Length: 89
Image 1 (cartoon, rainbow, N blue to C red):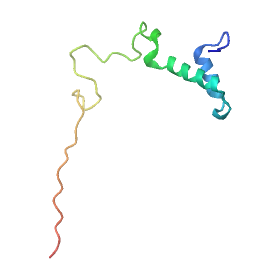
Image 2: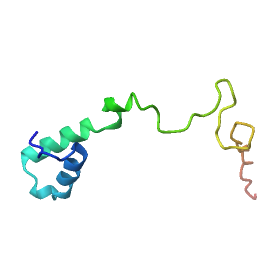
Image 3: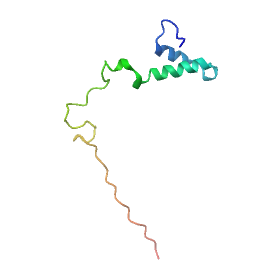
């Protein structure tokens, strides 16, 4: 990659994305693809030592937090089969 000194990978990605698609060179497309892959959340190795971004769901073994009816489960709607249409003779 030909990334300038003092520019982070994320800043370089933003700079490449600011260039209109029609004006990007083949080298810029390649660099853009490499940066997107490297910065994807699943490929970031520095995230492993930081831990999750979300708060823990609760104590292990407790009811799952789903935001439903307060019982730890979502309310489901019952669907009933519609009676058949009756035609007049």
